[in-house]
Image (cartoon, rainbow, N blue to C red; front, side, top):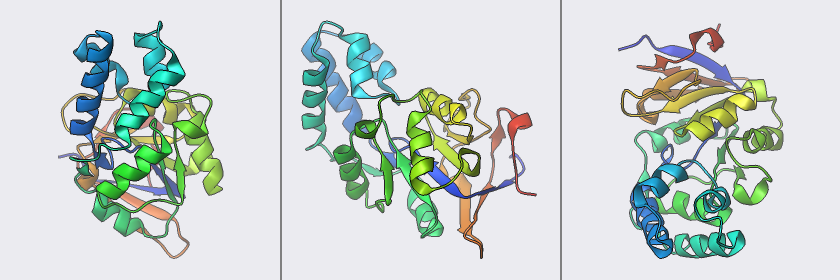
Length: 231
């Protein structure tokens, strides 16, 4: 096991699906339905969707379709499909430990779906939530994470991003933030400053100055030269 690393931050910015909420059964079910509707390859659809907005997915895989109409269709399906959404390992414990620290959710999905999945999983709803509804450019563009930092009143360099998708890692890095990748297997999310199997490998608490202290147990470094650990 790798040596634990300790980081300081003013804010932690979490991706939603696959980081805080395990919504994979729901996502697979809905994307499969959409792929079948348009005669698309299921595997290609599922792999292309990871960490991306519906609008970007439609534009790539179904350029003949009306993007707004397809996004509305997907969001209508998602608005009533929450069965199977559960907290990811360690999510409840870490969010409880952070308490009233500055943290946010930054998702490629819609706000209504994000709120529904958080509530279905029994997780707290943050005061700051940046969704596909709030940005012009989705991940991998840095806009979503920059918008979250601005809403929290912190500098990008004071933020730690927690992501499970290549597009999200790229978004956080492009925003000038430190990035922790969540990936249960040996695969690396390139560019991330460290990688853990799940949030269960991260301990967090607030110090007297409301600075967040994170300890990463079993973290695997991806770009150690970019790390800014505590001290």
